[in-house]
Amino acid sequence: MTQNYSNWGRWGPDDEKGMLNEINSPHILNVIKKINTGTVYSLGAPVGKLGPIGARNATQHLMSSIQIDEEKRGYGSSDDVLVTHTHASTHLDALCHHWQDSKIYNGYPWDTVTPDGAKKCGVQNVEWIITRGILLDIPSTKGIDELDEDYAITTSDLDEAVEFQGVTIHDLDFVFVRTGWYRKYLREPNISHVNSSGLSEESKNWLTRYNLIGVGADNVAVEIWPPEQTDDDDTYILRHGVLPIHVLMLNQLGAYLLELLNLEEISKNKIYEFTLVIAPLKITGGIGSPVNPLAIV
Image 1 (cartoon, rainbow, N blue to C red):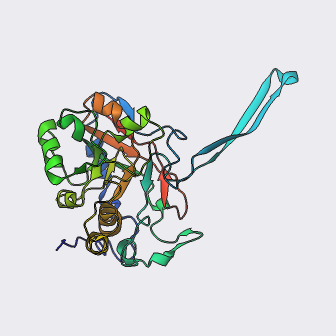
Image 2: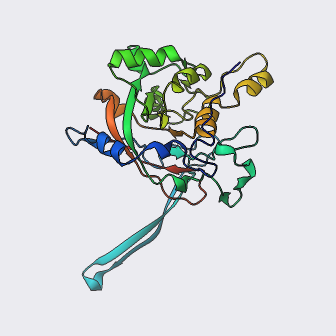
Image 3: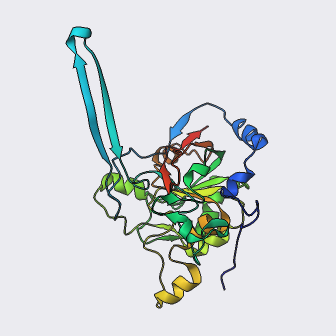
């Protein structure tokens, strides 16, 4: 039987931030002290380049105004409009994104997510994330560029990467898992999101060793997609949920997920430890937000 993990009530019955409650000023100061060179790496994909992803519509970038007045020394201005799915490019999942047993994180009813947005656990509660980031480069550990699209990353794979890279995982880390999917996407931009390697259901054993702020990956769901299945799909769903890593992290632990990351540059430069800075858009009632995470070393 799968062990039940839960942070519900850990920070009180009204909590909507989850693991972010653990990040305080001393922690931030300690993380910032680890910066040595001041080199900054962007981990975000270009907005508009990823998508459509499955049923998610492609981003539309429209120019609303382009003006110039030759009589005023050529003065001009321009404006634009961005129409985008909040999960169509690099993004952070809010804690209300997935639920199970009809309840979102901390026991709030599922119907607090309404057509007008989420009344509880919306992304506006995540004003910032500043913590230690760790890259686990699974393909590089195995001496390859990218994983097969049906490869499910296990606890053993994660442990192997930790040992190979010589890193140590700490509580309050944000762990980044590279699969090579984004590299494949850049090469084949028309590939479907239906098949992508990612974390296995079994990797919950690894994720729950630590009090992680979150986990991110360079694929569409962090976990393998489509989900792992057994001969009896209904039995699997009853045991693990449709997306077991989403349920574990967002719903049970109040920890966060980052998806569609560009980890190629830090992989190339073997940047395995860094100071992570994320500032999501404060979308009231948002289910997620586009982000451009920064890795500072």
